[in-house]
Length: 429
Image (cartoon, rainbow, N blue to C red):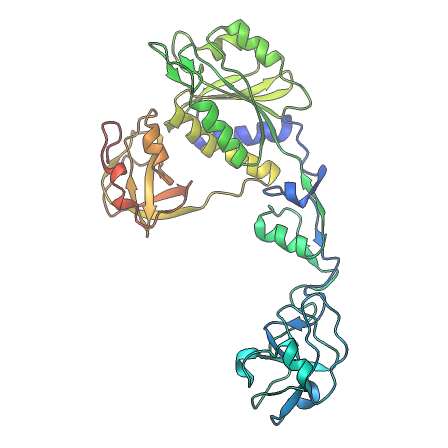
């Protein structure tokens, strides 16, 4: 079956939506310490105001409302440390107050210590030896350096809305409001399989004719970054019966997706194709390079996706098809940033295919990294974007605009990175 990129993206999104059994409305209540990256299922309101009381923005002197006019020598009152409840402030006095400390009743402003005379607080011994005073400047405005109660958020207001993916700022706000746990969407659970007699576990001895398995680590990391829970199966060889056994053992009800890599192309030993003969799984050819071979369907009611075996093809497939579907279904991960950039070199693309090249983006320009081949993993690792050349584009010249998807941070000067410029496997252009 021949598909466009858009058609297969819609097919994957529909498969997950209608067959995965994932319920975005079903909450899991977690402590804040476990909620990073999770998506809220309902609005969370602030149980207290922030700040909860009027407090000082500076280390300085709290000044009574009656003393805001002409400057005068004010008697220094008892100091107010943060965390204490101060007595009311009497007119004619100024209380040393620390940043974040509660403003005493009667106080209307705070004068920073560096604007006072003397410009340092009296010691305990100086207080004990007499009645110290402080001179404050002219024109002290009411409310100066005072954080009013509720000026950030009032009690009862929505602190974080449903559907928000919780990051450090949102979790910090909830903690400041006194919220200890939150209702979030459950994690999308994926069983990850990698096939092939030629692959070996990283860290083991490499036999002649074999390669290390990169796909399991690559896709597990991508799925974890996308907020999914991943169960990683041991490596599977090219025995269809063994693969069928592993697929049959997938726990129904606790697995939302089975994802495999390899064994779906046109070779003589395509184990996934052989194992799934007669099943509902469709094997498609998507008009995309790399990542043309794709598989999708259900096995015993569990959604199944098959990605190509080359590492770059596997990650491009994830970014183009599975990541957007996870966002639509679960709210996580956040969508990738897409933008236009100017090519710094000429590029060609095969007719009738959506080519996805790897590149380095900075300051409105993009430099291609490596060629179009799907084995150039080093080129992928040194890239920060995917460059799109749609099916109706066979060439773009330097200086022309292309659409790209950011998949990594933008370096301060990627064009000066010597490692990118030349190796035997990674060439520019």
